[in-house]
Length: 226
Length: 378
Image (cartoon, rainbow over all chains, first blue to last red; front, side, top):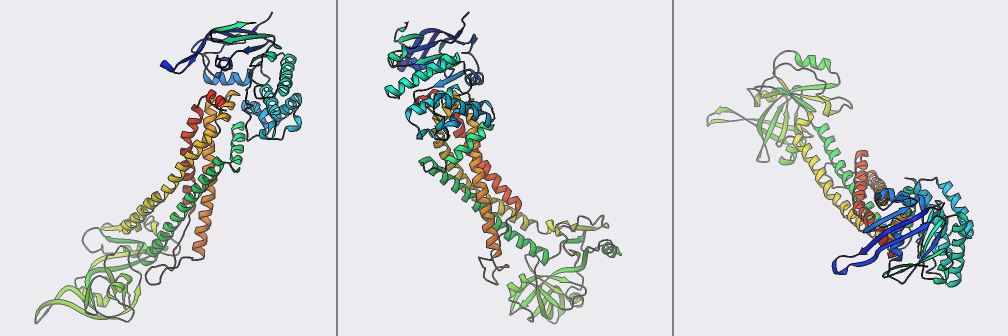
């Protein structure tokens, strides 16, 4: 029996006050089953990233509920949300957002260190992940010494460090050329499928989106599942 | 805690890079260190002068005084001899005090007259020597307020004497003091003066504790301790040190404000880092703790460096007597510096506290900034 990894129920979210208020999400709902890779596509400004931040517990909806793995999470305290992010969620952003003062290996080990893992254990795990994403030879380099594709691979490795159940990807190929984007998406697909993860990916790239299990179109008036 | 220390260490190492924020951070660190050094030097200077003054007080006058509780005569009996026998670590000198004038070179200077049993010749203290321009061998006339009848009516008693030597003065005395032998004293003060017993510590005894172990004294005898004898001067010295120390501490306040600006810039520069750390599950509180720890570490580094440098410089200046003072004007030949361990700890502590306080606002701002703002700003 399949279970839902993500349930977004009637999500409302807007920014600003008064006349300057912009309503981004208007009662949006979404269900993602465990092990499913879902692409969210749509034009700029319709709230794709906002949706991802709500699902990733980085923001709170104005109204509606978010459930992750059968647990209602939209009402959790900031500390509980932080713990949940560390233990169950992995993020990859359009900009790699690697920490400039740390080597690639340390960046990948960082989520484990934040969890309180010993440095040696965290670095060993980081080494394994860097092998998996194919940049183990770059482990001692700093982020600025890597190409864009390598930086995103490092970001993917970091997202997987804590063995998350849900991977949230915000335009992970947005800053890459088509070849690098193709390679990175292939790697993501392989990792998600081989490890049985659930993935929600926000992208502008319709071709890549079609390779996911399901594509959800998000428009100004709501979503159209395909 | 492990992650915080790891990130903190790397951020501190990152300050060695030649980025704009790193250069400003370096300047903040140096300013804080210089402030600590200046404070150490100032406190060492004040302590040096105070130690000199305390030494002169210790060497120049009694460490305690036994006086009549009422009237001007001490109770009779062998109590003083018993006291001397009981306390071999102290020496006791009985004397009488009165007022008078010293006339020298046609000028009369009011003085305290001390009648000291056993004294062979007239001595004057430095205060009197300076006021009346006296030196050993000078001829003076001593005048007593006790009148003597003359054909012209009552006139002050007058005795001529030669100054045998100049001795250190009593710091509490506003007037100069002349010490005279008993026989001369009887002439000047036929009714006798106010009796007192001066108490001195022998050897390395601490003058401040001279009266601590005296035990019960006979009725009619009161005691003035070293602190009571010199209270106005010692209080003035403490006040001086406190106020000048607070004044110089303003350097640290300015340096801490500089550090506050720097940490605010650093927090802005690291906003993406803070956002991604929170996205990876670090609570806001840990982000704030990171910046507070950064302030603490920078304060610790600057404080340690500045305090050590100040201590080295103060020790060097004192040991080499690098700043001489003109002889005869000051009681010491050079500007003394005496860095004490408590003052070093005080300066280090104040520096660290100032830096920690400077980090509070930037830390709060870094933690309060929204995660999305940091992620999208990148």
